[in-house]
Figure 1 (cartoon, helix red, strand yellow):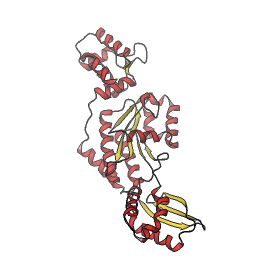
Figure 2 (cartoon, rainbow, N blue to C red):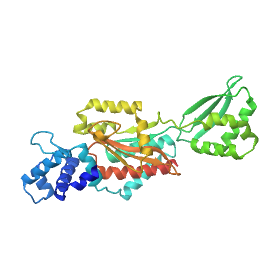
Figure 3 (cartoon, rainbow, N blue to C red):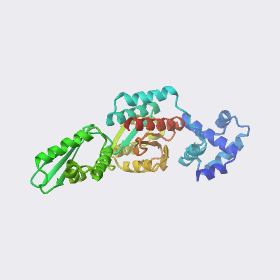
Figure 4 (cartoon, rainbow, N blue to C red):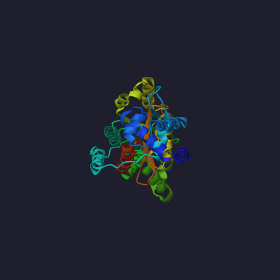
Length: 348
């Protein structure tokens, strides 16, 4: 739809529309014919500009916040601008080096890297930074099987970030304490400090191709205690920094109820599975503008998100910026894109 409308506009309409949007992005203020004449260096009359503004408003690209106050872009207009008229910038070498240094400065701890990335992208964008990741995208510190009673064994998996997962396994008393200890020691020796996904893949290969005593003994325990564990998409890790910056925008701050709901949704992780599912199907940076934003449903907010991937190019989370509709997309899109790639490399 945006492409057809973009083609439909003539060069003069595109120029005037672009001037209105750029003025809005810079100042947040509407543009009338006199302002467009001064800023856009357009060699036509004020009457002609007003006529074109009226046509753009009929197309749903602009609106007048008040009578005779000039025009502002609608969410539809911002989408058209981003898709067809915006020229994205590039990060400087110093900006790239800063992102690398900050993401690496905390070491390779899963939570530290993602928390630092959220703070970093918030600071560089001057808006709220958000990072999402399904649980279990972290290394395993310790694996242990202990007997609970005559028919049940408990698997205990401790991650390097402090998370502990317990699971009860029915074994009908098949494994005694000595075997459980032997299996635990074997698994810790072979798989300590590996990510869960890598452990699951390697253990499955061991079970399929090895006839070793421990592999045979532990096949059922490993299946129930490790192989059947899956990343928790419904309760992801969320790192969110720079919330106060959302209140600095005049349009956004007028609707404090929506802002409170946004913060509640983030705290309660409401609908964040949708973000991970959307980034899983995305090839790169996604821009959700205003009321088109599937998550926030707020006409004053936009979100720029990009997936980050592991060394096998599998998407393992998402990183982005949340801010007012008049984000500096030309700067923020390459910022989010580059940071997502660095985070992916650090966590691989």
